[in-house]
Each structure stands twice: as structure tokens, then as C-alpha cells.
Length: 206
Image (cartoon, rainbow, N blue to C red; front, side, top):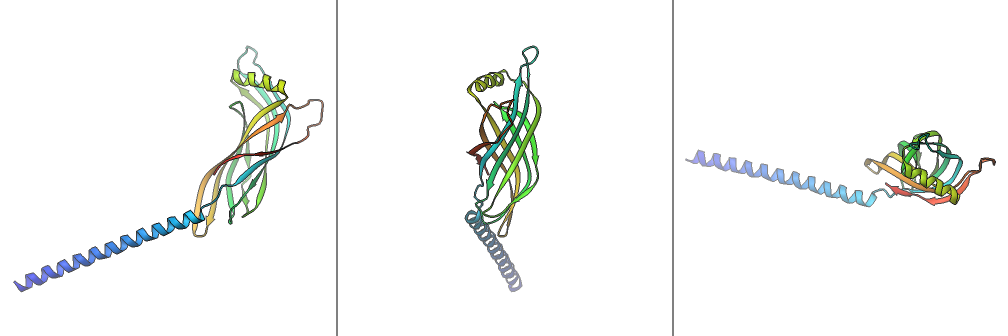
């Protein structure tokens, strides 16, 4: 009948309109997503650059345990790392901590105060490690004896951080790690400790 036909026509037209609206919404979402991705790729942050500028190692004594087991490392180390921001926006180091390790054994930890790294700017971060730590590794003791004879210790310092930054309309967060391998002269117990100028480029995981 005419009324049934009219109803089917109206229903079909409504379904077609609804389908069209959904397609338009989907296309808008896809277009916005693509535009956001392209914009992010253009404006995405470049990795910071880090250099270990200087270090002062005033004590580094690893004594073997009483029964030849785990040893005790007594240490006093200060390291200055210069961090440079190549981006046109500042980076907030919301949380940062420095760790020191020797021959794969971590021995020191130093929390770093949160700070801002200004756009196209740089900042020197100082990490200080002092105290004693148990080293449960015979390989570390062998490395220590060999390097002491050579006149230099190889110590690794890492800076772990949680970063926050804003790029135009984007607010982003990520984790970062800076790793510096330092070649430090064996300290002279009878002399006043002096800084060792390094200029060592550090690996950056940004």
C-alpha cells in the first residue's frame, strides 16, 4: 500500500543519512589523527646531548673479604655532566637520579633535584657519590687490581630521568637515560684531590 511504501522509503532514507553521518565522522577522525601524526613527526623532540665535563675521584678502595668472598668498595666521587637541549622548547626534568657502577656492579646512588632545561640551553648536573658498598663479584676485584696497576679506573655513571615537555599543543612525557663511561686516574692518597677534565661524550637514550 502507499503508506507502507512511504514508510519504507522514509526508513531507508533515514538509514542512508545515518550511514552518511557516520562516514563523515569517521573521515574527520582519520583526518585529525593523520594531521596530528604529521604535526608530531615535524615537531617531535630531538635528543638532548650530554658530556661528562669533569670528575673528582678522591677515594676508590676495593678490599677483598676476610674469607675471599664479597669485597667492600669505599668511594668518593663527584661528576659534572653538561646537558644541552637542542629543541625550541624547554624540558622539565621532573625526576632524576644518578647511579654509579664499576665492572657491572652498582655502588653509588644520588638523587638529583628536579630542574628545567631551557630551550636551546644547557645545564651542568652534579652527581656526588660517597660511602661504601658491598661488591659480590670476584671479576670486579680482578678488574680493580688490573686497572690500579694501569693507573686508571673505568667507572660508569648513568642519569635516569622522567621528562615532561610541551610542543605546541602537545603535552608529552618520556623516560631518558644518559650513560657516561669515565676513565679516572687512580687517586693519590697523599695529595689534595683535583678535578680531572674529561670532555667525554655520553650516550643518550631519549
